[in-house]
Length: 537
Image (tube, rainbow, N blue to C red; front, side, top):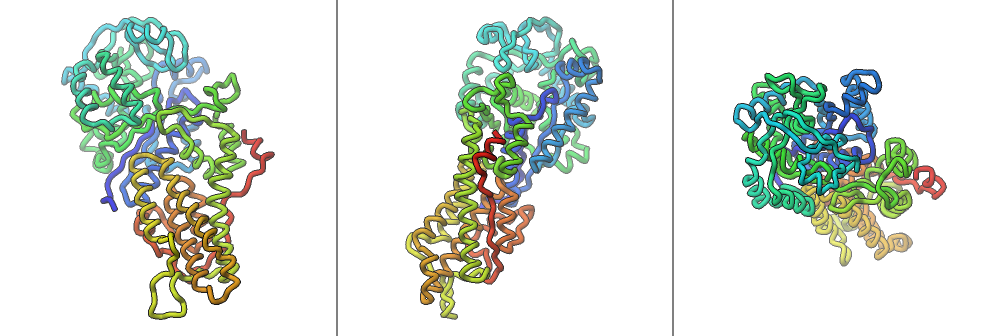
């Protein structure tokens, strides 16, 4: 077992001008599964999410509604916090960029960059994406056909005086970073995108704006507001108090830096993979270990669009929750989501198929089948796996092809490696494969036939004990994804497991189910009829 260590995982902070939707829920769920597993495995985990609350779009939206930008930020940040609690996400903190602690530290960091000469006052003339609040050079704008790569709206010609960050000064150091640490950006397709842009050469990036006021002021120059993207990136270290070593926040949280994973959507990769590490280099702060940029969800084979009516917003998600439950939603997100280089298709029919095949017919059916046989053949008292007639023989009754201690140990090892690499679908597949192995074991040994022969009582007992024990170990691996249902299974097996104790690997040792325990038949995932399923989609 690997030594316990600090783990720091972050989502991007979500822009308060948007309403929560599947993208926000997905990224945060990915981080939640990682955080839950790592805590269960005994690691000291800090999981951060939050909201990005400054910028021109927020100012304009607030003006249109006749309220202050702070009121709009407060309203929408509260909605994001409400949504997070709805999905039982286990973030340790929720940072808001309007928090005075964040604002103060951003100004301290920017002052350090001014003092070092990494920030200077200059003139910007070029193209601006109002939706993404991102600047482009003439060359890049022409390549994009002068349209936003995200919204496809026309770029706006802009000319103004700005403070600049000397990104160009870090070209060679960034090239060295990508050469020496090939896993700094994952998946590989995203890394290749960044390498392609690096070859074009880096331009200095504007760090301030003067055409609006809703933001953090530049130190000693209140006419300039710090560019929302620069402000937002600092959240990962202001949450840990890194600008103020004398602060209580720093004393408690600085141990978590560098971040293990920044988990983001691929559309914001440039800022995280190039601008952010360059700023950290300029500040002399260690770089995060990995920027993981996942792909997008599409819906029913098409890009999501409110016009097409296929947008998976909060109301659509709630329909799925009402029909299938939260654990089913989490399972689909993790096993079918776009964590790799390709976009993932969210389809109502596919959701139903995965729920039925994986959760109802595999996890639920196997758990029900085994617990039912223990109730039926042993009056709900868990039998042992040793020869009950021999006091001296304590070796388990093992059947050919099913050396369960080895099978389970190797499964736990593979699952842990997958989680460590943020390969969450592969980790889930390990838990599912272990349960399928139990089904194969039952089909091969036919305990329901052995139950008719009293001379096979010890063999029957061993089969049912081993089946229940393998399911228990699989449940430990699946708990970070489907926590409510696995907790229900533990209760049916008379187990009291607290994942916060960090004992996953001890619990995953073979033999953790004590013979003589009371077992109840359990029904974990109810079958959903097509008529009910149609109300979700």
